[in-house]
Length: 233
Image (tube, rainbow, N blue to C red):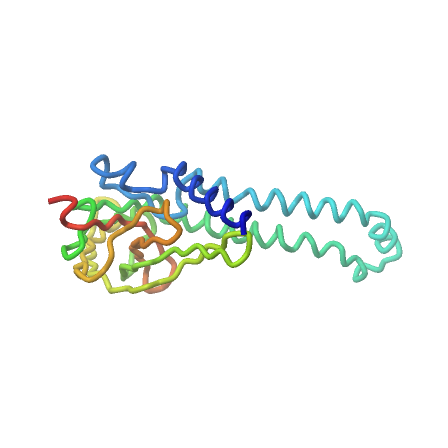
């Protein structure tokens, strides 16, 4: 039990140090522009770390089985070279990453510009997104989703779960921009929903805005700040 409590406290300290996750600390009053999730360069670099570990593990397995592999190769027993299956996972990871990179490059940067910022419970969330590449002929829809992150300490290691609590459609008005299209987004946030909460706690609510094309080729998400009216009156 003592170890579990220690791990919980260390987890909370780590969250407190990670100030980049809180819109209230870094974004309030400084910028109405929110980058789409998964499109930042720093985020992309982190996703390549698992590939390095997969490649190192594959190289370790192949090196340890090199004599057997060479024997099967010279004997023409290619179906017996089962150790090579370890390369399947790095190749699969590479294909998935290249697919994501292609989609990001295909449509370019698509920041969300919010006005007002932040949105307020009981009032209207509004903003726009411009898509400057390959948007001709696409039709778009949007939804606003209330999520909850929960940390469960069933074992000594904490497990993080994200649950969808509620969602609603967002009104989308599509108009031509100087380059590509501009999507005007608007949704009325109900009074009976919780605002965005600090990610420093074990359990907290947060809001996501999703925009997607009807043919599924385009899909972007943004974490959007939603506050209580009293805080910004």
